[in-house]
Image 1 (cartoon, rainbow, N blue to C red):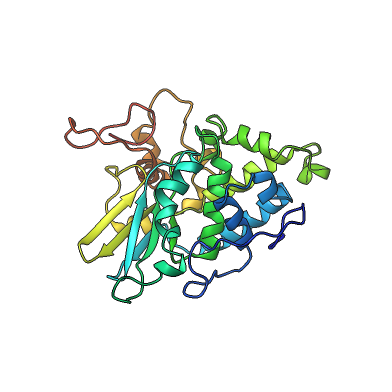
Image 2: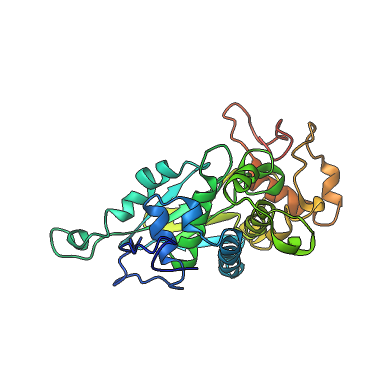
Length: 307
């Protein structure tokens, strides 16, 4: 992937998310991509190689995520601040102006120290999932977050939401977005003649989605906090249970995919199937909804997860 200029040949000054002198990028491979997307460069220019560039990024971030547990343990010191972020749903402009700007505003030379000359506060980010679908720039959002994760793996943390699943993102916009922005035909189709670029890219992103951690425990001076996209279930008994989950199998095949099209909730019979209890735990982490009028848990009327 080109690192210093666009196809037009015009070089632009790189915008680093963290000061390169204090927090250098780990891979030094996606600094241009990050800079481009932070400055609003169209995705077709930020990924000039199309699905090939997307596939390379997906492989790199998958390698990073494979080294993380299904449950992240994040320690925040007094020198750090953690920003916890909910649903993005393809709203790139909001993510840039309301979330990432918190750190970007710290990276100017005059902001590197506070009024007393102490090191500036460095922000870390924990995203709780639902990066794609519904909004117009899900591809830009997830591409930028994947690139940030590769370059700053100890500062950017990504959890999985219920839209980071093939059955959901196929229907609610991400597939069509890949089709419109990464269209074309892949020679040979990757083993299937005529397989289009959008299908290849969409599958690559969804393969990475399967490796996103499911929850996080944040430890800081104020205490410990449990974070997940959805919530709990009657089967989420302990932190070790979440750590032991084979998250990459959930949503990868029909056996591990939430029956999103079903109008009836998954019943207790699934506890008796191989991996069934683990699936119910993951269902809760991704799909459960709070209900202030309910005491205890019951099956979610959406057909997956719990209330």
